[in-house]
Length: 159
Image (cartoon, rainbow, N blue to C red; front, top):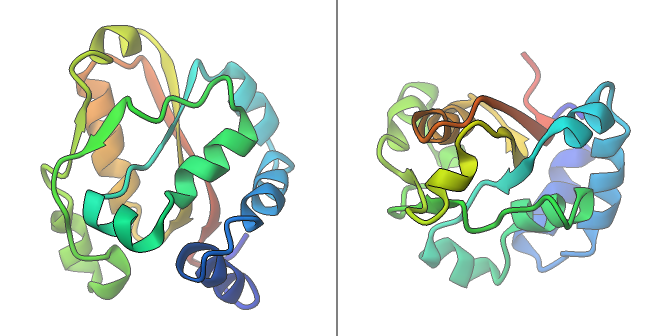
């Protein structure tokens, strides 16, 4: 979906107003996007973008984890990627700062690195704006040996 009204309002409810039930509806729309079902099937692991402990405490749940579980509970690997530090929300930053805000923010869990080697990984997130979050996460997964990393998001800002 394009990250425009009404999706911006619905995503805000999902993320910030304790409306976790939107995950089922959003995941269904994600699965029906062109090529998404095939990509999910080909992936060995779905890895939701992790939240910092601080942001998780504020929200009470990780919206990317909920989406991933609805897409494929069996393939969801919620502990493969770790958020190493709390960062300002990407949505609050101008584009140049978004590109550097997440440097060093992600790491592959040490006990999971061997399991990711040679695997096809799909990152799951709710919104993509600059792509900096997905790029930072993909970089550490590739460094850990993932053979292929792609992403599926519910909405993205119009180009």
